[in-house]
Amino acid sequence: MNRRPESFPELPAESHPFLLLPEKTVTLRLADDQEPVKLRYREAGSGTPVLLLHGLWTEAFTFRHLIDPLSDDMRLVMPELVDPPGEPDAYRPERLVDIFLALIRDLGLARPVLVAHAESGLAGLLLGLRHPQALRALMVVGASIELPLMTGARGRIMANNWLLEQRAAAVCKQPIQAAMAMIDYKDATVTSRQEIRRLARRFISLPSARAAVRIQAMTRSPAYRKEIAAELLARAEKPAAYPVPLSIVVGEADRMATLAQGERLNRLFPGSELMLAENSSGAVQVERHEWLANAVRSLVRRIGQASD
Image (cartoon, rainbow, N blue to C red; front, side, top):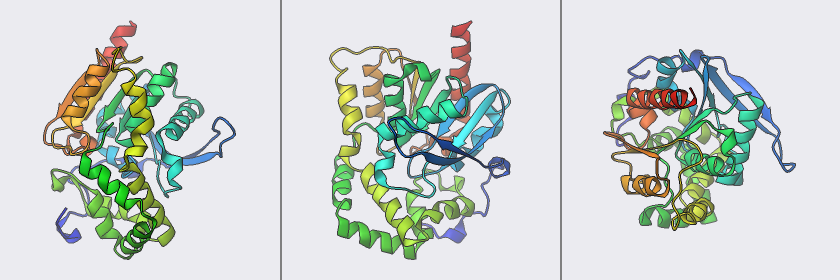
Protein backbone atom coordinates (compact mmCIF):
# COMPACT_ATOMS: atom_id res chain seq x y z
CA MET A 1 0.00 0.00 0.00
CA ASN A 2 2.06 2.89 -1.33
CA ARG A 3 0.30 5.78 0.36
CA ARG A 4 1.03 8.01 3.33
CA PRO A 5 -1.04 7.45 6.52
CA GLU A 6 -2.46 10.97 6.38
CA SER A 7 -3.96 10.22 2.96
CA PHE A 8 -6.50 7.91 4.60
CA PRO A 9 -9.64 9.08 6.42
CA GLU A 10 -9.59 8.95 10.22
CA LEU A 11 -12.61 6.61 10.35
CA PRO A 12 -13.92 4.00 7.91
CA ALA A 13 -16.15 5.44 5.20
CA GLU A 14 -19.05 3.37 6.52
CA SER A 15 -20.02 3.54 10.19
CA HIS A 16 -19.98 0.41 12.33
CA PRO A 17 -20.73 -0.49 15.97
CA PHE A 18 -17.67 -2.68 16.65
CA LEU A 19 -15.95 -0.40 19.17
CA LEU A 20 -19.26 0.27 20.96
CA LEU A 21 -19.61 -3.41 21.85
CA PRO A 22 -18.33 -4.21 25.36
CA GLU A 23 -15.11 -6.18 25.40
CA LYS A 24 -15.28 -9.42 27.36
CA THR A 25 -12.66 -11.95 28.44
CA VAL A 26 -12.80 -15.73 28.56
CA THR A 27 -10.21 -18.12 29.98
CA LEU A 28 -10.21 -21.36 28.01
CA ARG A 29 -9.24 -24.67 29.57
CA LEU A 30 -7.70 -26.75 26.82
CA ALA A 31 -7.36 -30.50 26.50
CA ASP A 32 -4.27 -32.55 27.35
CA ASP A 33 -3.21 -30.23 30.18
CA GLN A 34 -2.24 -27.44 27.81
CA GLU A 35 -1.79 -24.00 29.30
CA PRO A 36 -5.07 -22.08 29.64
CA VAL A 37 -5.64 -19.41 27.01
CA LYS A 38 -7.15 -16.02 27.84
CA LEU A 39 -8.92 -14.31 24.94
CA ARG A 40 -10.76 -11.04 24.58
CA TYR A 41 -13.88 -11.04 22.46
CA ARG A 42 -16.93 -9.02 21.48
CA GLU A 43 -20.39 -10.26 20.67
CA ALA A 44 -23.60 -8.87 19.25
CA GLY A 45 -27.13 -10.04 18.57
CA SER A 46 -28.99 -13.24 19.37
CA GLY A 47 -30.19 -16.25 17.45
CA THR A 48 -28.15 -18.67 15.34
CA PRO A 49 -24.60 -18.67 16.79
CA VAL A 50 -21.96 -17.51 14.30
CA LEU A 51 -18.28 -17.57 15.30
CA LEU A 52 -16.23 -15.06 13.26
CA LEU A 53 -12.51 -15.89 13.29
CA HIS A 54 -9.90 -13.58 11.77
CA GLY A 55 -6.59 -14.58 10.21
CA LEU A 56 -3.33 -14.26 12.10
CA TRP A 57 -2.25 -11.11 10.28
CA THR A 58 -5.42 -9.21 11.14
CA GLU A 59 -7.89 -8.86 14.02
CA ALA A 60 -11.60 -9.12 14.80
CA PHE A 61 -12.00 -5.48 13.71
CA THR A 62 -12.07 -6.71 10.11
CA PHE A 63 -15.58 -8.11 10.74
CA ARG A 64 -16.90 -4.68 11.77
CA HIS A 65 -19.27 -4.28 8.81
CA LEU A 66 -20.93 -7.68 9.27
CA ILE A 67 -22.39 -6.73 12.65
CA ASP A 68 -25.34 -4.58 11.57
CA PRO A 69 -26.60 -6.81 8.74
CA LEU A 70 -26.32 -10.09 10.67
CA SER A 71 -26.94 -9.40 14.36
CA ASP A 72 -30.73 -9.09 14.08
CA ASP A 73 -31.17 -12.86 14.13
CA MET A 74 -27.67 -14.20 14.75
CA ARG A 75 -25.40 -14.25 17.77
CA LEU A 76 -22.06 -13.01 16.46
CA VAL A 77 -18.94 -13.82 18.49
CA MET A 78 -15.66 -12.17 17.45
CA PRO A 79 -12.57 -13.20 19.46
CA GLU A 80 -9.14 -11.58 19.28
CA LEU A 81 -6.72 -14.41 18.49
CA VAL A 82 -3.42 -12.49 18.30
CA ASP A 83 -3.47 -9.49 20.60
CA PRO A 84 -0.86 -9.34 21.94
CA PRO A 85 0.94 -11.91 19.78
CA GLY A 86 2.27 -14.96 21.62
CA GLU A 87 4.71 -17.69 20.65
CA PRO A 88 4.27 -18.95 17.07
CA ASP A 89 3.62 -22.56 18.13
CA ALA A 90 0.43 -21.35 19.83
CA TYR A 91 -1.02 -20.56 16.38
CA ARG A 92 -0.42 -23.77 14.48
CA PRO A 93 -3.62 -25.16 12.92
CA GLU A 94 -3.85 -28.14 15.27
CA ARG A 95 -3.48 -25.86 18.30
CA LEU A 96 -6.11 -23.46 16.94
CA VAL A 97 -8.49 -26.42 16.63
CA ASP A 98 -8.23 -26.93 20.40
CA ILE A 99 -8.81 -23.21 21.02
CA PHE A 100 -11.86 -23.10 18.76
CA LEU A 101 -13.36 -26.18 20.42
CA ALA A 102 -12.86 -24.60 23.85
CA LEU A 103 -14.42 -21.33 22.65
CA ILE A 104 -17.50 -23.15 21.37
CA ARG A 105 -17.83 -25.05 24.65
CA ASP A 106 -17.08 -22.29 27.13
CA LEU A 107 -19.22 -19.63 25.41
CA GLY A 108 -22.14 -22.04 24.99
CA LEU A 109 -22.33 -21.61 21.22
CA ALA A 110 -24.11 -24.94 20.57
CA ARG A 111 -22.84 -25.96 17.11
CA PRO A 112 -22.18 -22.55 15.57
CA VAL A 113 -21.72 -21.59 11.96
CA LEU A 114 -17.98 -20.96 11.67
CA VAL A 115 -16.80 -18.15 9.36
CA ALA A 116 -13.01 -18.34 9.36
CA HIS A 117 -10.47 -16.25 7.45
CA ALA A 118 -6.99 -17.23 6.22
CA GLU A 119 -5.06 -19.28 8.81
CA SER A 120 -8.18 -19.65 10.94
CA GLY A 121 -9.83 -21.11 7.84
CA LEU A 122 -7.17 -23.82 7.71
CA ALA A 123 -7.84 -24.66 11.35
CA GLY A 124 -11.57 -24.55 10.65
CA LEU A 125 -11.17 -27.20 7.95
CA LEU A 126 -9.31 -29.43 10.40
CA LEU A 127 -11.94 -28.81 13.07
CA GLY A 128 -14.78 -29.87 10.78
CA LEU A 129 -12.92 -32.99 9.67
CA ARG A 130 -11.98 -34.10 13.18
CA HIS A 131 -14.95 -32.85 15.20
CA PRO A 132 -17.91 -32.41 12.82
CA GLN A 133 -20.34 -32.63 15.74
CA ALA A 134 -19.01 -29.27 16.97
CA LEU A 135 -20.17 -27.29 13.90
CA ARG A 136 -23.39 -26.51 12.10
CA ALA A 137 -21.61 -25.28 8.96
CA LEU A 138 -18.25 -23.87 7.86
CA MET A 139 -17.42 -20.93 5.60
CA VAL A 140 -13.72 -20.69 4.77
CA VAL A 141 -12.61 -17.28 3.48
CA GLY A 142 -9.24 -16.82 1.76
CA ALA A 143 -7.53 -19.95 3.11
CA SER A 144 -4.55 -21.25 1.11
CA ILE A 145 -3.66 -24.94 1.42
CA GLU A 146 -0.56 -24.56 -0.73
CA LEU A 147 1.58 -21.46 -1.04
CA PRO A 148 2.77 -19.90 -4.30
CA LEU A 149 6.40 -20.79 -4.94
CA MET A 150 7.80 -17.33 -4.21
CA THR A 151 5.76 -16.96 -1.02
CA GLY A 152 7.05 -20.27 0.31
CA ALA A 153 10.61 -19.33 -0.59
CA ARG A 154 10.21 -16.02 1.20
CA GLY A 155 8.88 -17.85 4.25
CA ARG A 156 12.02 -20.01 4.39
CA ILE A 157 14.22 -16.91 4.15
CA MET A 158 12.24 -15.09 6.83
CA ALA A 159 12.72 -18.04 9.19
CA ASN A 160 16.41 -17.12 9.56
CA ASN A 161 16.85 -15.95 13.17
CA TRP A 162 19.19 -13.09 12.28
CA LEU A 163 16.85 -11.77 9.61
CA LEU A 164 13.87 -12.09 11.95
CA GLU A 165 15.65 -10.00 14.57
CA GLN A 166 16.58 -7.35 12.02
CA ARG A 167 13.01 -7.23 10.75
CA ALA A 168 11.60 -6.96 14.26
CA ALA A 169 13.90 -4.04 15.08
CA ALA A 170 12.94 -2.29 11.85
CA VAL A 171 9.15 -2.59 12.27
CA CYS A 172 9.42 -1.53 15.92
CA LYS A 173 10.89 1.76 14.73
CA GLN A 174 8.12 2.28 12.16
CA PRO A 175 4.98 0.51 13.44
CA ILE A 176 2.57 2.52 11.28
CA GLN A 177 4.43 1.61 8.10
CA ALA A 178 4.60 -2.04 9.20
CA ALA A 179 0.84 -2.07 9.74
CA MET A 180 0.18 -0.54 6.34
CA ALA A 181 2.33 -3.21 4.71
CA MET A 182 0.03 -5.85 6.21
CA ILE A 183 -3.10 -4.32 4.68
CA ASP A 184 -3.44 -5.69 1.18
CA TYR A 185 -6.87 -4.44 0.13
CA LYS A 186 -7.54 -4.19 -3.58
CA ASP A 187 -9.56 -1.07 -2.81
CA ALA A 188 -7.44 1.00 -0.42
CA THR A 189 -10.34 3.37 0.29
CA VAL A 190 -11.98 0.82 2.60
CA THR A 191 -9.33 1.31 5.29
CA SER A 192 -8.73 4.21 7.68
CA ARG A 193 -6.14 5.55 10.09
CA GLN A 194 -8.20 3.94 12.87
CA GLU A 195 -7.58 0.45 11.42
CA ILE A 196 -3.92 1.17 10.71
CA ARG A 197 -3.29 2.30 14.30
CA ARG A 198 -4.99 -0.80 15.68
CA LEU A 199 -2.75 -3.09 13.64
CA ALA A 200 0.32 -1.03 14.55
CA ARG A 201 -0.13 -1.86 18.25
CA ARG A 202 1.54 -5.23 17.81
CA PHE A 203 4.76 -3.52 16.65
CA ILE A 204 5.18 -0.83 19.28
CA SER A 205 7.53 -2.82 21.54
CA LEU A 206 10.43 -5.01 20.50
CA PRO A 207 9.14 -8.23 22.19
CA SER A 208 5.72 -7.81 20.60
CA ALA A 209 7.21 -6.92 17.21
CA ARG A 210 9.51 -9.94 17.41
CA ALA A 211 6.57 -12.26 18.13
CA ALA A 212 4.48 -10.74 15.32
CA VAL A 213 7.30 -11.08 12.79
CA ARG A 214 7.89 -14.70 13.79
CA ILE A 215 4.19 -15.48 13.32
CA GLN A 216 4.28 -13.87 9.87
CA ALA A 217 7.32 -15.93 8.92
CA MET A 218 5.72 -19.14 10.21
CA THR A 219 2.48 -18.65 8.29
CA ARG A 220 4.44 -18.09 5.07
CA SER A 221 6.23 -21.39 5.54
CA PRO A 222 5.10 -24.52 3.63
CA ALA A 223 5.60 -26.45 6.88
CA TYR A 224 2.73 -24.52 8.45
CA ARG A 225 0.31 -26.17 6.02
CA LYS A 226 1.95 -29.58 6.00
CA GLU A 227 -0.42 -31.41 8.35
CA ILE A 228 -3.66 -30.14 6.88
CA ALA A 229 -2.38 -30.62 3.33
CA ALA A 230 -1.55 -34.25 4.12
CA GLU A 231 -4.96 -34.81 5.69
CA LEU A 232 -6.76 -33.29 2.72
CA LEU A 233 -4.64 -34.90 0.02
CA ALA A 234 -5.25 -38.29 1.61
CA ARG A 235 -8.82 -37.78 0.40
CA ALA A 236 -7.81 -36.97 -3.16
CA GLU A 237 -8.15 -40.58 -4.31
CA LYS A 238 -11.61 -40.87 -2.79
CA PRO A 239 -13.32 -37.47 -2.70
CA ALA A 240 -16.11 -37.35 -0.15
CA ALA A 241 -18.59 -34.78 1.03
CA TYR A 242 -17.36 -32.56 3.84
CA PRO A 243 -18.94 -33.63 7.17
CA VAL A 244 -20.86 -30.32 7.51
CA PRO A 245 -22.11 -27.82 4.89
CA LEU A 246 -18.99 -26.16 3.48
CA SER A 247 -18.67 -22.85 1.59
CA ILE A 248 -15.30 -21.88 0.09
CA VAL A 249 -14.84 -18.15 -0.52
CA VAL A 250 -11.90 -16.82 -2.54
CA GLY A 251 -11.10 -13.26 -3.55
CA GLU A 252 -10.81 -12.65 -7.26
CA ALA A 253 -7.40 -10.96 -6.83
CA ASP A 254 -6.12 -13.05 -3.90
CA ARG A 255 -2.49 -13.94 -4.57
CA MET A 256 -2.29 -16.71 -1.94
CA ALA A 257 -5.75 -18.29 -1.72
CA THR A 258 -6.26 -18.35 -5.47
CA LEU A 259 -9.31 -19.48 -7.41
CA ALA A 260 -7.36 -22.59 -8.49
CA GLN A 261 -6.90 -23.54 -4.84
CA GLY A 262 -10.58 -22.99 -4.17
CA GLU A 263 -11.48 -25.17 -7.13
CA ARG A 264 -9.22 -27.91 -5.80
CA LEU A 265 -10.92 -27.86 -2.40
CA ASN A 266 -14.28 -27.86 -4.15
CA ARG A 267 -13.32 -31.04 -6.03
CA LEU A 268 -12.06 -32.73 -2.87
CA PHE A 269 -15.40 -32.16 -1.18
CA PRO A 270 -18.26 -32.75 -3.64
CA GLY A 271 -21.30 -30.76 -2.66
CA SER A 272 -19.29 -27.88 -1.20
CA GLU A 273 -20.04 -24.39 -2.49
CA LEU A 274 -17.32 -22.37 -4.24
CA MET A 275 -17.89 -18.61 -4.22
CA LEU A 276 -15.77 -15.97 -6.00
CA ALA A 277 -15.71 -12.49 -4.46
CA GLU A 278 -15.04 -10.06 -7.29
CA ASN A 279 -12.82 -7.03 -6.68
CA SER A 280 -11.30 -8.52 -3.54
CA SER A 281 -7.69 -9.34 -2.75
CA GLY A 282 -8.66 -11.76 0.03
CA ALA A 283 -10.03 -9.76 2.96
CA VAL A 284 -13.57 -10.25 1.67
CA GLN A 285 -15.10 -9.32 5.05
CA VAL A 286 -13.76 -5.79 4.53
CA GLU A 287 -13.71 -5.27 0.77
CA ARG A 288 -17.02 -7.02 -0.05
CA HIS A 289 -18.77 -7.03 3.31
CA GLU A 290 -22.30 -6.65 1.93
CA TRP A 291 -21.73 -9.55 -0.44
CA LEU A 292 -20.26 -11.71 2.36
CA ALA A 293 -23.10 -10.85 4.75
CA ASN A 294 -25.57 -12.05 2.12
CA ALA A 295 -23.53 -15.23 1.65
CA VAL A 296 -23.56 -15.95 5.41
CA ARG A 297 -27.28 -15.26 5.61
CA SER A 298 -27.93 -17.58 2.66
CA LEU A 299 -25.87 -20.34 4.32
CA VAL A 300 -27.74 -19.99 7.61
CA ARG A 301 -31.08 -20.02 5.78
CA ARG A 302 -30.20 -23.23 3.90
CA ILE A 303 -29.19 -24.91 7.14
CA GLY A 304 -32.48 -23.91 8.72
CA GLN A 305 -34.45 -25.27 5.77
CA ALA A 306 -32.52 -28.55 5.83
CA SER A 307 -33.29 -29.05 9.53
CA ASP A 308 -37.03 -28.35 9.16
